[in-house]
Image (cartoon, rainbow, N blue to C red; front, side, top):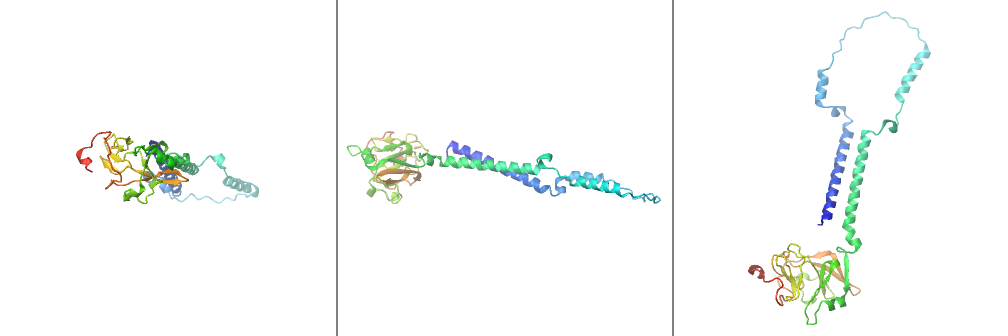
Length: 287
Ligand code: FES
């Protein structure tokens, strides 16, 4: 996973946490407002009970009834004013944004941000395929040209390195290939595409013309010319891509990597000459 992917995943995680936090706060406030007891603390309610004032229940002094002249016009005016005060409505613009509305908007903004980050992350993931680089299908050339380029006049092998695919294209006799590659789509037109990365710790594995194999300078793993394990700390064969011949052109599907275990029996002979990095330690050379 690249550093860019890690950063994007981190940003996406932070946005998700922010969205969840905003949602939790908004939900708590919106549901808590329905019950005033939830909004008032227990200590506050206890203090209120302690300070409760007992209202004396003495009989109110009696007064003699006095007949007050009733004039209809002033009473009607008072009722009308009181009614008018109760029904006056205040627009949201006049009262400002309510707390619930504020949190709803915050929640929507957080969720929108999260979706935006997801969109960016998806675009970053798709970018290699859109650009046609590593991760997409890479056209390496015509089969005839590659077959000619990967054989030396004396019958030796010289891999063709395809930088865009991060792959070595090598010739292969499909009829003598190890059974573990049969039907896996890793050979086509007499060619294979090996991933350049060592399966031990990821160093790029250079070609050694004298031994006719790949030899990793980092910790000494060795592979024959079709990437089968020979020795060293590598746990398996070199990885390879699925390939296809389309209209006589060799296409490498760099988004489809095939892994295989250490070769019990190699398909080609190795080494065919001196090593470029020296001999392996005894136990590993016997692997
Ligand atoms: S990275 Fe190649 S042998 Fe360790």
